[in-house]
Length: 268
Length: 306
Image (cartoon, rainbow over all chains, first blue to last red; front, side, top):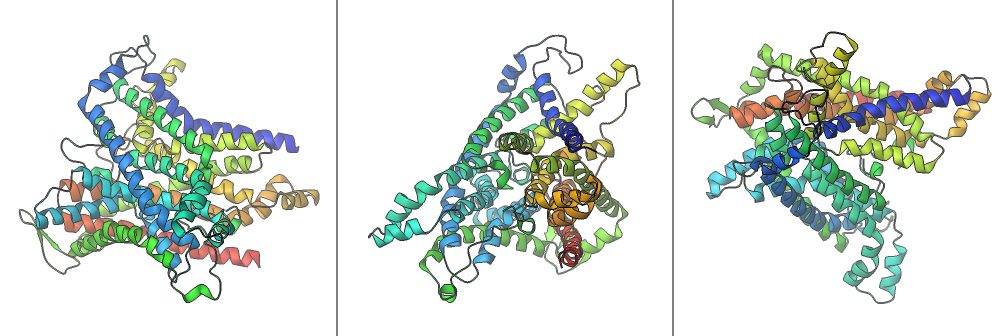
């Protein structure tokens, strides 16, 4: 075959495979506008009503608020813990550095359902021990979501630190800057894109988490993903499609923004 | 990050800069910066895992929940009960099939992306691959439900053409379709970064010596991309072994895979000892299979590269 023909074959296969990945999302966006009372094809007309209805449903509205709240605090936790740790990993010289890196990335490796189950049991034990509610509360969710976000922050921030020459920091220090000044005036501005990407990415990862959260939600405090799954177990209608569409839109925007700071495909 | 042997996918750590020879053994003050994060992971992940392992050795007494014991009966029950054998069996074959399909469908796309001359287009297409990945499993599964449902888009199209509708929802086929589309981006991104690191001149050289494109793929690209293929395959297999949303929503109430069963035992039946044992069986089986595959492929790769 001619090289051009070979290239066309690849382009055609790629188009089909990409369609397989992307088009279902298009379908869900499409049906969120259907006027049909019961979801069916073809559409009898188009409407925005489902979006209003979705917002009026407590489970989705509260779930959305809980998810945003949780994700924002999880980002703060993962940055507060992850940025210093990344600095230590990349600039520090101590034995066991690789082991600590592996440990910090391990929440990514332990299956969500296993980690979630373990955390759930530990929380219940603590509740019995200390006589406080943890499982089903915001602090409980935050521990889980901080854990979900941390490895991605560590990975993205270490990557940008590895790409930064320590010469800048050494220069600043040789001119008399202290460690803190060096960090805030030299290191931070240079790795800012990595940190912004880490924050946005951690937000998304926390927002879409399902497996860990499923153990830790309680009555009155459910994340959006759990609300979606429990609704989908019994219903499939344009209301849930409307919620899905809003989620696609929000995450899409966040990811497109974070892609400007660090190539997303590099995060994996 | 693009060297064939150093794919950064999954949990593979970034190579850290090597410590200077003299400083190697000295504890620098920066060490302290890693302490809070390390403690957090130890307390929030490692300690609960250890606790759960301990619980897997306890005894479950209905009505009393959990009784302290040191017994392997939960593990024994798993290997004695044909129901759970079947759950594990289903999980294994669904995962193996989904992973194989991901590899087959993902390789051409990854190759196309890696050899894409225009950087701008490559970036856009990669973004198109990665975006769906981060939309969340709940949303992506909902999307497949819209298509695969009895009155879904697929059957609507089938009926318009004049064929009889197909029962897809709540079948293993539908679960595999859902899983493949969820996992494909992982495979594509992993393979792409590895293929990108393979010198295109090697392919040109083989071609100029008369090799057909398929021969070039088989004899040049495939051997060099092997670490990436391994990484992508492991990643997809692990993720599919632990899949939750797809089997629950697309597989339906009578379709059982391991992760939903763990959830059911721990959170619904409140049988912690058995649920814990299930979780560790799932992790152990996954670990043994992936480690074995890793060793086999690494050995093969070393032979090739010598």
